[in-house]
Length: 332
Ligand SMILES: Nc1ncnc2c1ncn2[C@@H]1O[C@H](COP(=O)(O)OP(=O)(O)OP(=O)(O)O)[C@@H](O)[C@H]1O
Ligand SMILES: [Mg+2]
Image (cartoon, rainbow, N blue to C red; front, side, top):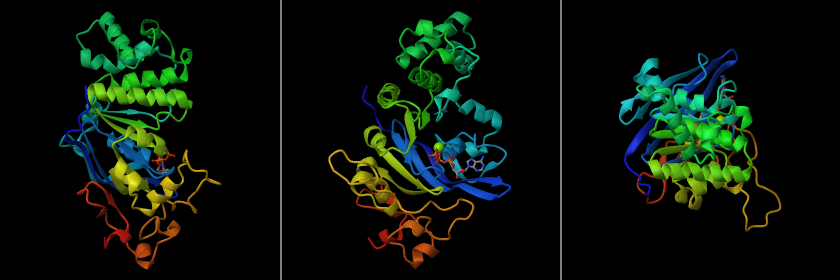
């Protein structure tokens, strides 16, 4: 079945998640907006510490409590405002309507339960009438869906008995077991080697094609973005600074930060002396500059950039699809 990109199902607007610590307030997410359509693969990219994971956790209200709190913004899933839901209602949403594959598969599985039991735990509430045998059947089917070989035997295994790549698949099987609308994959592959990584990503894409679910990929890797995603949101210091269709971002990166990120991607056909890296450090999230957060590292920055945060401007002719927050786009 061909994948079809449909209506917007998730809308995030002006999200703010701050961490209140003894040393001050860390503005981990400080005004992030984006939306996600049915059947779409959206990438969130940005340097380490830019707030990608905190954004994802906030969508599920799983930000580290009590330090981190969502203080402003809205998150709408199929029109429903998730920030108005109670903890009990959120429990019905997590896993069933939005599920998340965590950064490290090693820590997402419980070492003392078998693979089968962990899958059954995930699906049991949805199949309350089922007896043990049919639940096991469902767990085996779940493993088949993520192409685990000999699933009848694997359900009996404990996490330490299976390889890292297989663990990642099991985590994937748990994430899709309740047929969620949205899956968030936070760097699902960093602890895997490259071949297994490619296989796993292909698998996620295949599952997406079969089920037409929406994917959010959180990654540092523009190679993954180019291969796997339809649209990109670039984050810098707690904010989105540019977003748009993958092709537009690659062909016409419009925020100086995106341009710098793309310049630092190694190219196969160019013989470069050394890899480009962006000079300087991202600002401290507890002491942010007034104006554009990238200004201290930006070769184009002027007084206004340092004074006022730029709004988001439309880029190119592609309607409202491609936008970037940079004063240089104002006159265009
Ligand atoms: N419990 C916490 N208390 C205080 N600050 C925190 C806490 N958790 C995260 N942060 C801070 O929030 C900011 C955003 O972190 P986040 O994990 O979202 O970054 P990221 O973009 O996912 O980075 P990476 O690419 O390294 O995974 C970081 O500066 C981090 O130090
Ligand atoms: Mg992260």
